[in-house]
Length: 108
Image (cartoon, rainbow, N blue to C red; front, side, top):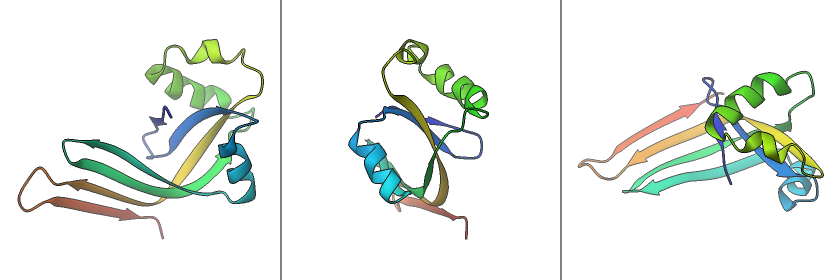
């Protein structure tokens, strides 16, 4: 799944309305991701997902399309939708060093 990240550490992604992701988020907006694992570096991320409203799409599209230049072509897909996830807890771990670097962020 391709993601883009805002300066506020929100995660943006696109998906189709018939996907499992949409059904799961509709049922429970709490989500969790593990991102990375190149060279023993990961980010664990928990947050609250919401569908991006039409009034917000332009701002989020700008960020998302900067990372995924092919994104505008997917706008023609049937049921394409965009979500943004606000972070609640993030842990960055780098086990390439000794001792490992582990940094956590929590938004209350």
